[in-house]
Amino acid sequence: MLARRFGNVAAHLGTKVDDGLVERLLAGLLRADRACLAEAITLIETSNLTKQRAAQQLLAAVLSLEKERIAQHGKAALSFRIGISGPPGAGKSTFLDSIGSHVTENGHKVGCLTVDPSSRITGGSLLGDKTRMPNLSKNPRAFIRPSPTSGILGGVTRTTSEAILLLEAAGFDIVFVETVGSGQNEYVVADMVDMFVLVIPPSGGDELQAVKRGIMELSHLVLVNKADGDLIAAARRTQAEYISALKFMTPESSSWTSKVQRISSVKGEGVRESWLTMLKFRDASLSSDEFTKRRAQQNSLRMWRMVDEHLRSAFHADPEIVRLRHEVEKDVQQGRITPLAGALSLIDSYNQIYYQLSFLSQFSFF
Image 1 (tube, rainbow, N blue to C red):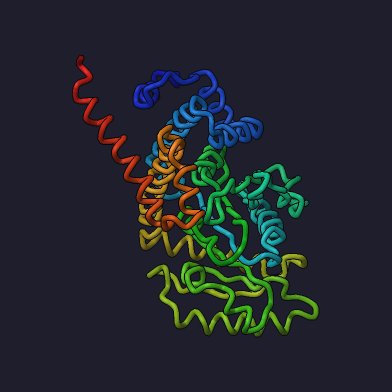
Image 2 (image 1 turned 90 degrees about the vertical axis):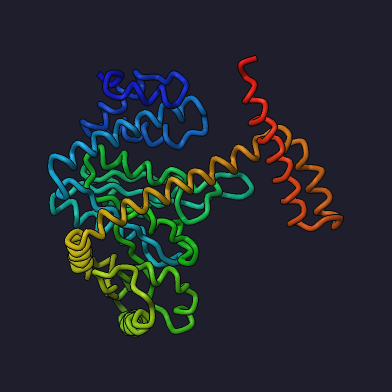
């Protein structure tokens, strides 16, 4: 059946893929099989070229089924994707545990993609976010998937967007994406979700300076967490400071004014109110068509990011570049040439290889 509906995908990829694997995983996703969902996410994260082709066939099938569902049910079939970012120690995982439990109690299925930084030395990650979600990790209506950044900047993984699609195919209508959480440059997630939420701890004016303007402007909702006990007064001051700061920033959305709210994830205070605010944002975005326009723009951005990633990978994997790089690196390290000159030298060498191959391909009939 899958081969009949999506067989053309393999032809576009140019290499035969494992239809049996793809069909099994797709069937598992459609019946919300958690093991198949986990295996599917692992498949799209692989660096194996053959498995990557199978992953692309699976994603093509998922996209086709999603288009059919939206055509049948309209905007009601759209999931709600929410990005969560903030500085370390803000309580992002605790907040997700609290709001995720609340959302599942209201009949939704919640998918959580958490991202942990990878070691520059070993390449490994702790992947400990799941341990900070004791309630949600045991919830049968929730699915938590921790993944390493693997050196990818922006607080997300290379395949976060694709993992979101797989979660939605498995019936998870609310998807949270938690970034690694530096709170400064980790906001690429804003280009993958429908709503961007910034979680911050109670702080003073100096800490406000640590949060960059860019992430503030992208935030649709700012949550001052840990507003309990001795920190209530500090939380109120922080809320007032951020409300004031947002007045001087250009809003990301023309249909929504960013809100600042206090919550206590540990006590559950303000969590229900924050969810209601998220739903109000969703309704406003859907009414103004910003919701669908944002997703269309995000697809274009994702395409160009993939172009950049594949070009970079092809560049580093080229045998001639591999041969030249050590010599050029040595010249740069010893100060014989500047880093810019070294980069341009490698790029020129790669361009010459590309043009030579293009020229020879014109005579392939020989």
